[in-house]
Image 1 (tube, rainbow, N blue to C red):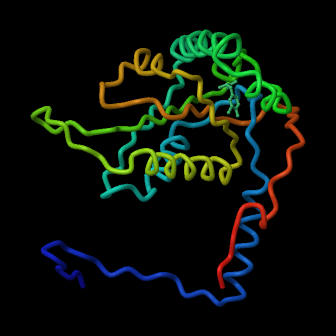
Image 2 (image 1 turned 135 degrees about the vertical axis):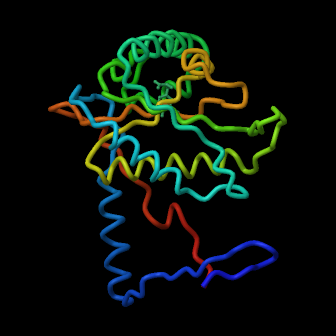
Amino acid sequence: MPKIIKGFEHIPYKVEAIEETEVLERTKLYYQHLDQRRSIRTFSDKAVPKEVIENLILAASTAPSGAHKQPWNFCAISNPALKSKIREAAEAEERESYESRMSDRWKKDLEPIATDANKPFLEVAPWLVVAFKKIYDLDESGNKQTNYYVNESVGIACGMFITAVHKAGLVTLTHTPSPMNFLSKILERPVNEKAYILFPVGYPSEEVFVPNLKRKSLDKVSCFYE
Ligand code: IYR
């Protein structure tokens, strides 16, 4: 039965009861599953149905957000002409970044990942999904309605998008050409939307090599206070 709390309807919510051993097993399996995820830069051009992308966006959009404003817009592009435009503009920004904007230290840190200004995945991947953050919403009369914790909210939604892609057996990459305002222009986004992360989404190319990176051990990423 719904209940009125402070004037608003609340509905009952139940969490599935699970044995502690099962909880332990699930956390272990989920960690192991996520640990298999890698950022992939070489894609197959194999098509991915639109409904799959819709489901991934719906999964991302279940993320918690400041005052439940869901301050994001995921733009999904499969149109080849638009993908080519995006590649051309992204590579122009990246060339500028690699040649003059990025520090030597930054470029040195990126050496193990072997990136450069060429971004063929922007044309090869069947879908590009660009997450836009909405600093504010515009109501019907065009008034600005501020959103809250926008970076945190969109960051969480993007994390959930990435895990949903992985769970589906697809691959992606967090591509952040900087600055990203060319995306607003090409995709004709309104002024309240700012590009946040670009995700190429698809199947990996037949042969994939990823850098042999190691993840930090638990003691390097946590502190326990018992
Ligand atoms: N945006 C550039 C550079 C780049 C920056 C970081 I931090 C990375 O982890 C990887 C790449 C590019 O996409 O090449």
